[in-house]
Every structure is written in C-alpha cells, then in structure tokens.
Image 1 (cartoon, rainbow, N blue to C red):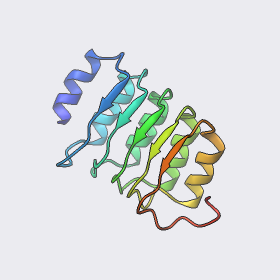
Image 2 (cartoon, rainbow, N blue to C red):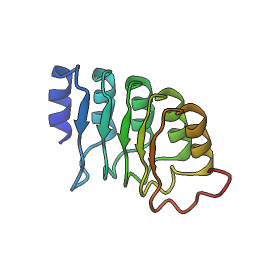
Image 3 (cartoon, helix red, strand yellow):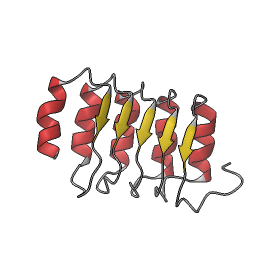
Length: 137
C-alpha cells in the first residue's frame, strides 16, 4: 500500500477525494506525508483504521491539506490530542470529522480547539471516545 501511494500520489496532485480505508493496517506516516506534500486540493480524506499512523501524519495533513472538508480518522488510536488540536488550527474548513475510536486524540483539549477553529463543522463522530467531559462539549 505504501509503495503504491508513494508512486501514484505525485501523479494525481489535483485529487479532491482519497479513500484509503484499511482492513489490514499498512499505511505509514511517510505515505501520508507524500499525500500532504502533493495533494493540496484534497477535500475528503479517509484514513480510517490506519493503526500505524502517528502524530506525524496529522501534522503533515495540517500543513498540506488545509482545504479538507471531510476527514475520517476513525480507529486511529495512536494520535494525540495535541496533534488533533494542531490540525484543527490549520484545517478550518472541516465540515465532517470522524474521530470514532480515537481515544487518545478526542479529549477536552482537542474538542475545545475544534470548537474554536472549525466553525463550519456540521458532523462530529465521537463514538467510543469516553474521556470527554462536559468541559470539552
């Protein structure tokens, strides 16, 4: 999967939708970095169940994919709340954000940043994110 992404993405720099849902987690931070470096027009990105991804991926997306309106990172349990808050500060056009199962990332701190920066948000999935309190909402 990573080699495919690394070889194809530079040829499709005008992509607006990219769905890389994982059944077997293979995608790594280098592949996401390549996506962020070349696909600046992305509006929908689905990286759900990409368990190998770390905060590096969210930082790359924040800098390279600022026009995102839909982001699905459900099941990506390694992301931190600081990285998610950082992403919110750059990806301010988000309308749909799926954080289902992002137990470390979906915190009160991250939700406050999302609420502050992502004022176009219409849908937020927080399923299985049980560390959120009234402060975050």
